[in-house]
Image 1 (tube, rainbow, N blue to C red):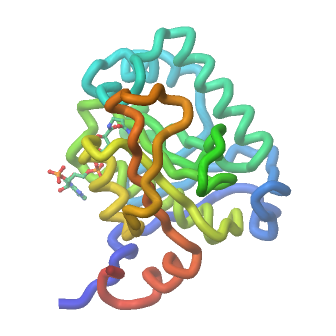
Image 2 (spheres, helix red, strand yellow):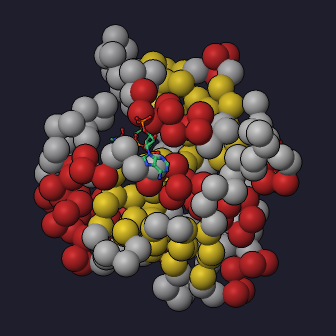
Length: 222
Ligand SMILES: CC(C)(COP(=O)(O)OP(=O)(O)OC[C@H]1O[C@@H](n2cnc3c(N)ncnc32)[C@H](O)[C@@H]1OP(=O)(O)O)[C@@H](O)C(=O)NCCC(=O)NCCS
């Protein structure tokens, strides 16, 4: 049986048409942009997202693999940083909403890591969904659309993702996306104290070339 690995969900990127010619780093828009997939809308953040986002960031299960849960103030500051990023880069961690339902379920998107490592400067793809939304394929669906935006609209050459190896749900998203893992890329996160079980990270990569090949070639890319 043959199938196209990235074609399971369609995604439509709506927004300022000038963005088509933009490149990361020199890429901006002032309109509200939405990315639509079969089941999701990836969009800029709204005030109404603050409460469910704070609840999600206070959930110990959602935050199990992070250094700490976030207070309401920290959660709001996160949104403000992300919104500033959209204004600078033209992409970021999109708020994710269920199409037709309107519920905020978390975020997925692109973000430049703020620390130095062997693979930086880079653009990372990341995700965080509320617990009730896990197990539906939403993270992978949103991430495919974010990768498409990064490669097809922002002109990125590579997008990375990283986590601690015990975060198996996150690693599974990276693998479903067709991202590749070379153990030689694994690294100790410089902002996490030596000896912490959160320090060692696995790094996954997706190149624009691989993305293009996977979008046009039948069968999953290995
Ligand atoms: C990481 C995270 C986003 C992954 O969520 P997830 O629900 O496991 O991943 P997806 O949304 O891709 O869903 C995949 C699951 O949905 C299932 N699924 C159900 N319906 C589906 C559908 N219509 N299409 C695709 N998959 C579907 C898949 O079979 C898979 O199930 P499995 O977990 O039993 O294998 C989530 O665990 C999370 O928010 N964790 C906390 C934050 C975090 O750690 N972020 C990463 C930091 S590095």
